Length: 79
Image (cartoon, rainbow, N blue to C red):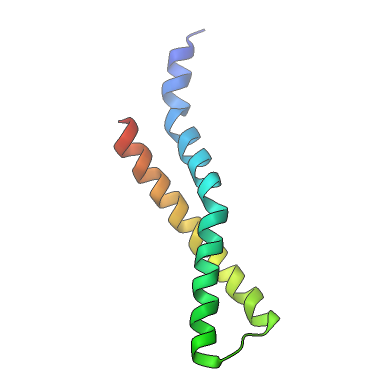
C-alpha cells in the first residue's frame, strides 16, 4: 500500500475543492452586493423577487470564478 501515489493523485483536486469552498460565500456575497447596487442605481429600488434572481445569478458566477481561480492558484503554487 503506497500512500504517496494516492497523495499525488488526490493532492490537486483536494486543494482546489477546499479553496473553492472557502472562497465561495464571500465571493458570492460581494458579487451579489455589486449586482444589487448596480440595479439600484438604474431603477432606484429593487424588489425581493429581483434580489433573489440576482442572488442566483451571483451564485452561478461565484461558482465559476472560485473554481477557475482555485485551479489556477493550486497549479501555480503547488507545482
